[in-house]
Picture 1 (cartoon, rainbow, N blue to C red):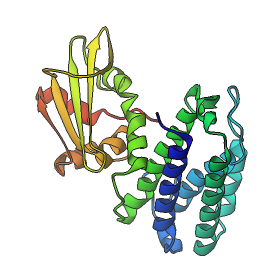
Picture 2 (cartoon, rainbow, N blue to C red):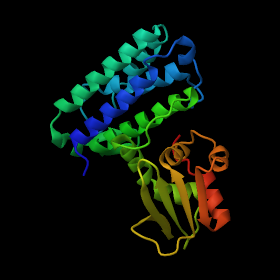
Picture 3 (cartoon, rainbow, N blue to C red):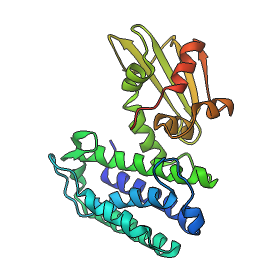
Length: 261
């Protein structure tokens, strides 16, 4: 089970990664289009860290989310900041959020909380935040040509978020039919094997003897395709995702992993 200390450490790593990317950027680089269509690099970072500014000091609530207006205000304030001011503000918010997490009672991870995907345990909310940070870091790093590590606690927790949604992805997004199954082999810094079978409905299973097809992808490719952030064709052409077994279904899966908005 993932502890509060684990979540706090993963947040710290994600924040350090974020700060390292933006620390030396100038105004033109901050205006680079991110992988989020509506945001440039500055706005993408301001959104990501603005959420954590809003979460700092927020007590998990099973009925109500935190105050989004706090994040929105930071996005507005960030527009007029110099690159150095912006980087400093981001680092300060990150430090405050880690301190906030470290001050909580470890049992808080089991407390009921509203999350972006409905009521769950607060620990699940923290995993969603690590997932969001990991993805947003790559939303800015990939367009800037910055290569980030694809392993470690942040990658593992980001992958956890996709892993627990694989039944939905296989059944609703890929459209596997009854009696079909798939295996996903994630390579790179956070290697993992996932199995999904359809028996009435698609769900995770412990093992498969003869899956309909097997997808193989590196960690970044798999998670970013699941978030709809990168073009499947470019990753297929680059050899970063491939399949064996039923070629038609393997290709369909590679092109239809997206499960986030």
